[in-house]
Image (cartoon, rainbow, N blue to C red):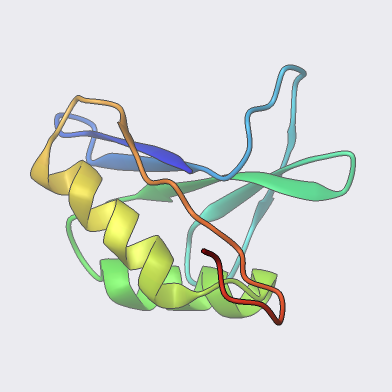
Length: 99
């Protein structure tokens, strides 16, 4: 998962998956735009990210059934390092502990 916060535009983009083709966007009630490719969410765009970020990301997380803490973690990492692409490596555990 990658993210970038453009400070001057106050725009946060969280990339869930790299998209190599144009995507289709869907605006949800809290304001963020979710970009889809082939029916899969690939990115989240949050305008005016400096205000109400937690509520906006909680709304996205509920809509996409994602972990809100993970979204907030990468968002804060991007905001703390403006105009820099940051990444967060995730591991999925399915009934077994990783060794």
